[in-house]
Amino acid sequence: MTRLHLIIAVGIAACWFGATEQLMARDVIRHILADGFDYPVGKPDGKGYYKYRGYTPNGHLGEDWNGVGGGDSDLGDPIYSVAHGVVVFSDDVRKGWGNCVIVRHAYRDDRGKIRYVDSQYGHLLKRYVKLHDRVRRGQQIGSMGSNRGMYAAHLHFEMRKELRLGMNRSSWPRNNSCYYHPTNFIKSHRKLRSSTKLYPIQVNTFAGQGRLGKDPRLKNLEVPVTESSLRPIEKKGSEEKSSVLRNILSRLRKEKDDENEEALEKMRRRLKKR
Image (cartoon, rainbow, N blue to C red; front, side):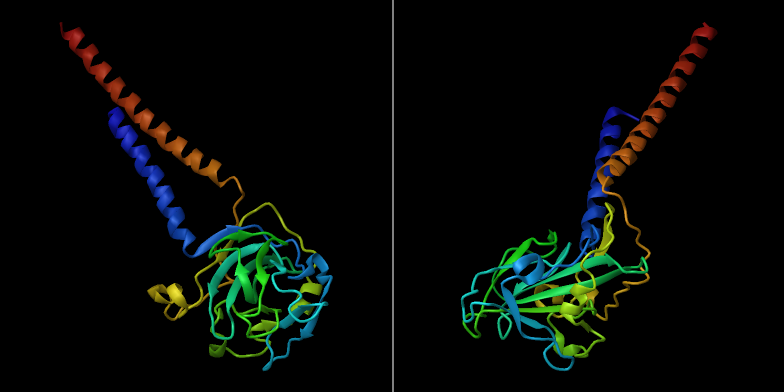
């Protein structure tokens, strides 16, 4: 194998790894587990804010958080991600919603099982994160808004069990089968056991919404979140890829050495005949 062949082979291997990462990134993004959940305003404990309206199944499916100053005194206040996670929706939905962000969190429950939950933040004045961003607990992801003056400034906040729900709430049951009571969930998950490993978080699970809805893979989508065969990997992913490339190079060099040895042997035979 010539040097040119060697370079081409390494280039193909590098491109293959890159293409694999891009393909996987459409459906899975790896991130650390949530190490706990905080409140989305007045981090970490909601200081300076109160619930104007609470969660009721088959009624109001989230919580409305307002500043204690009342009116629009909280307009533009920072909104925080309640935990480590991946942004699975960030768009201006308009209608009664305005700017919305949804973050998906992987966490370990009290039995050690990995579970997933979505946090939704509605009526934002501005969004500071985009689709598929990785975020940390307490990171500002937006600012409090009023949906262009439709309401007094406040945050509409939800915690969802159903990972296919997105902004299509009318397509799903409006009860505890799809939603958690936000405050109760946060209170019971303030501190969690995490790790340095990166766990798979599925993305692109919302059908019929904006650009995502045009993806044919989303038709009749089923999201297996409890029986996932994907295993967490350590953060040393780049080193693992380097190791594989080194193995490829080593094999190619060995093949080159074998070719050289064969050529030398032919030359020895010719010299003996003389």
